Image (cartoon, rainbow over all chains, first blue to last red; front, side):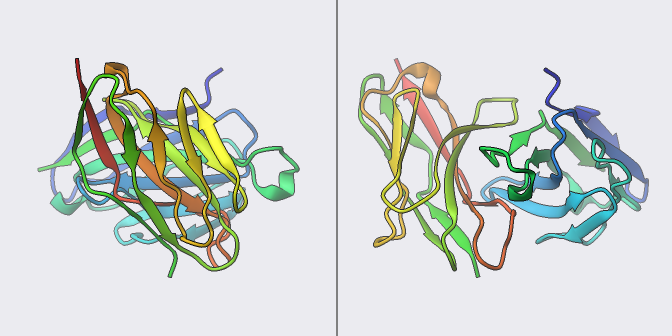
Length: 117
Length: 114
């Protein structure tokens, strides 16, 4: 049972560098999303997708890009990292009601701790 | 807009004490409500959920009841253990204008001392 797999677990970037955070799920979930977790602010939604080829912005999308070419993968790209993007990033996936599943519970990856210096 | 408000932590209790973590929400329509738990260094796991008014979710001794009249979903446990030390997040989804999005509260850290 792989569930939701995120890589890498830790990353240090210099300001201005780019990188991609990987997220993969093996549960055939149509809905996938990215959150960032900052102290005292809970989890804030960055981007989400309701299926391959469909993405949309969440609460804090600036500085991040996503794509969804397959059901399984939902990478998050930082084009030019800034210190304000230092955070812990979580990927999550779930069934959508249209998939006819008994539960739309969200499953989370283990997180990626990103530091931008 | 849709939002979730939780009591601020940390909450520090002795083992076997009674736990309540308050959660209230603002949402249009009829959202589902969730409690997630995050143990140190890990991702979030679903603890319990309720999908309609007056439903009670329960798991591992934790309970929460969906109260539409007070827009609340307070988490309770009768006797906490050291192993319950974690961060607890209240969340909602399925609000009328938010589709599948999970909206989280800010989290409440629980510390249980032996």
